[in-house]
Image (cartoon, rainbow, N blue to C red; front, side, top):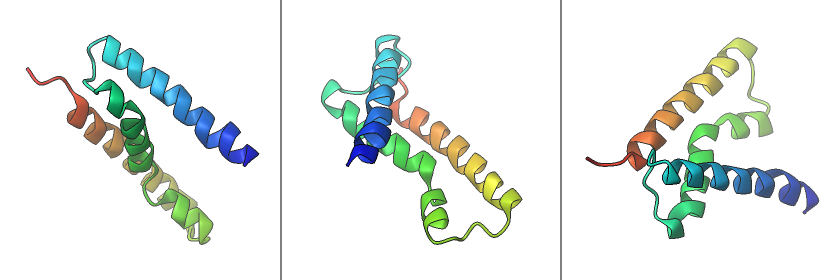
Length: 88
C-alpha cells in the first residue's frame, strides 16, 4: 500500500497539477471533472507494454527495449496532445 501511495499516487497528483497548469495556460483543454481521468490515460498511453514486458521478463534485447520505450512515450505524448489540444 505504501508503494502505491508514495509511487503511483504521488506521480498521479504531480501530473494532475502539471496538466492543470497546461490547461490554465491554454495549451490543453481538459474539463476539470475529467482531469484525473486524463492523467490516467496519459500514464497508460506512455507506459505501453513496457511494464508487462518487465513483469514477464521479456526484455531480451536492451537496445530494442529502450527503443520501444522511446517510441511508445513519444507517440503517446503526441497522441495525448492531439486529443486535448484547443480546437480553433
